[in-house]
Length: 91
Image (tube, rainbow, N blue to C red):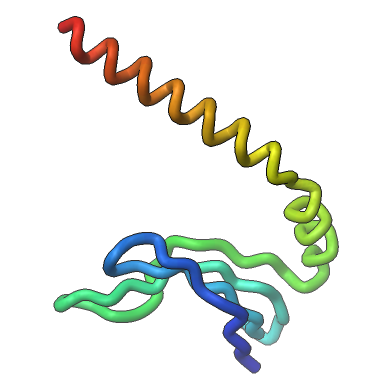
């Protein structure tokens, strides 16, 4: 059984696909990259799989992330980029 849950656009040629599947006879959630290019179209090796037995714990972890957590992380990343840009300009 395979059921696509959704996809998130990563860039012009790659999407992150979330799906429920049964790999090797074991159910779970797979999160992988799907690429479309002239050379290759399909899933890449990049991604991960959460076994069904661990899904409740994974879901709890994801649901514990708040909008504020993401905002703080974005601000921190922006500050790091600014610092790196400033350091590069001094050379």
